[in-house]
Amino acid sequence: MRLRNCHNFHDFRSMAKQRLPRPIFNYIDGAAEDEVTYRRNRAAFDDCDLVPNVLRGVSNVDMSVTVMGQKLAMPVYCSPTALQRLFHHQGERAVAAAAAKHGTMFGVSSLGTVSLEETRQISNGPQVYQFYFHKDRGLNREMMARAKQAGVEVMMLTVDSITGGNRERDKRTGFAIPFKLNLAGIAQFAIKPSWAINYYTHEQFRLPQLDSHVDMGGGVMSISRYFTEMLDPSMSWDDVAEMVQHWSGQFCLKGIMSVEDARRAVEIGCTGIVLSNHGGRQLDGSRTAFDQLAEIVDAVGDRIDVMMDGGVQRGTHVLKALSLGAKAVGLGRYYLFPLAAAGQAGVERSLELMHIEIERGMKLMGCTSVSELKRRNLRFRQ
Image (cartoon, rainbow, N blue to C red):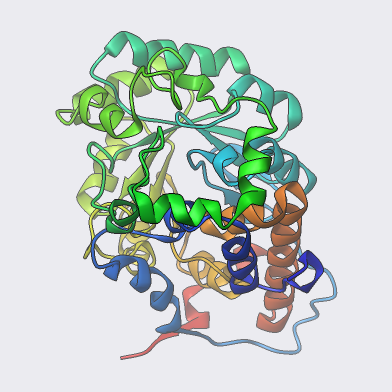
């Protein structure tokens, strides 16, 4: 399959599956335990129908939004994800460049494979730094100071990952960082030699945000040990409130799912929350962000910017989320499969297709701006 023949999420996924060794493909594609939440994330959108209006004069459509003080040319952003250079050697560089081209926000993870500083040089658009809460409070403050110095506009603390999810696809192949593959996993790498050539002929794989703590093979610490030994499961609202005050800027919590927690985020001074179940990769059986969106918007949407991610594969999915009150929608696998398939060109094409779908959908809905997307344009199936 060629990039020009990719017209939707499923095409990109198929192209990535052709290119990647199965353990790496499954790392992107897989989720926790029985993957019920993963499947439900996508299916939730199918339970909601759009009700369009016609004859509204929609020759010009403005799909721009402002979220956490950041102006985006389209109401989607590239959520921060880990290990991107494992999927394609360009990694976060490709995502930063593609996001800049389309005028939207992107994120760099603590477990990112390109530094905050380098991605900031690639894109002058809004940049998020996604980080985890460590037992070492000094390290937490050090990471925030580094982000501030790099020019990062938004801090995004992930709050649903105090321990790693039970991802059984990875266990079957022995996938881990550093690699500890079993025979079945090694065989899958052997039949995809182009990936190995690409991987080994480019710069050494690094985690520059955590170089002195975690790496890909030097023996410092595996990623699984990072989650179990360095992250603090006792993290509390008081701890986060202190970080929000210390940052003194746009601060977002990713992984909020209950009204109670959304209200607490407002109380401690957060400016944004992302409703998320981590793409179904953490607590299997948890509710979907889309299903939780309306009640959380009703509770706090007038006091904090509410975003969501999980299962978003179409422009119409974005329109449904915006109609329920989301300020913007995060993309994860939607751009990771194109990244794995074709690097920067793949990410650019996926964002271009999303832009086209949102614009077309708004015209067919009879809306000239995002603010015109309302709940009256939705009906939920019983």
